[in-house]
Length: 232
Image (cartoon, rainbow, N blue to C red; front, side):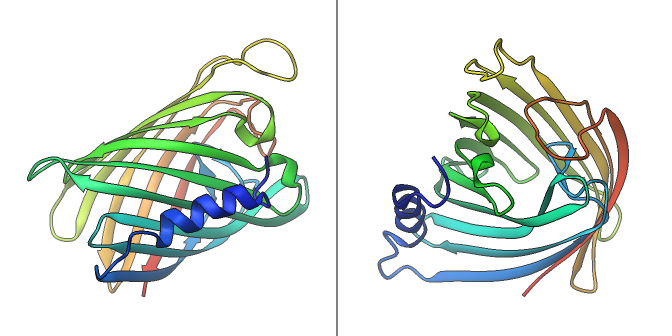
């Protein structure tokens, strides 16, 4: 099932705009400059700089959604647009803890056969969050997957913070090449700061090679990345 499916478009639009009622909605759009566009440890930009445009929405009723437009390189030397859309619902469970449920769609202009859908659930506190993502056909490869991630940050002096990420991608069967893919771990750690309206991050990223990712630069390597983001 691809992003062009009317059913998937209806799911996204309904979750994004539904149940707004009289609740005040907030919209924001942003731009990010990336030295290397890493997704779950794997470079979608073949280790090269990239630009990402983002749109985010939320309202007081708990509905949220958004999209990010960047590029992906599946064949060496050819980069095409990549669109990641998401929508969901979140509520507080207590004064310090919240939960969320939602779904996301990835669409790749170069080859829509790589399009895929995920559903997710998560819990979050002020300085950390945990999320679980499930896909019936990850990157359109016919592989059912489960991705579990943990993210956190610790404030440092002034505007600085220390942050970290750990994720585990597991193949649950359905590999069209035969067999079940092995689990794959990715991690990153770095420092960030909010300066002059921009959010800056310097991170060390580690992720091994995986047959679940059809991108051109899918190698077992570590990398240092730099990013700057600004929301309007």
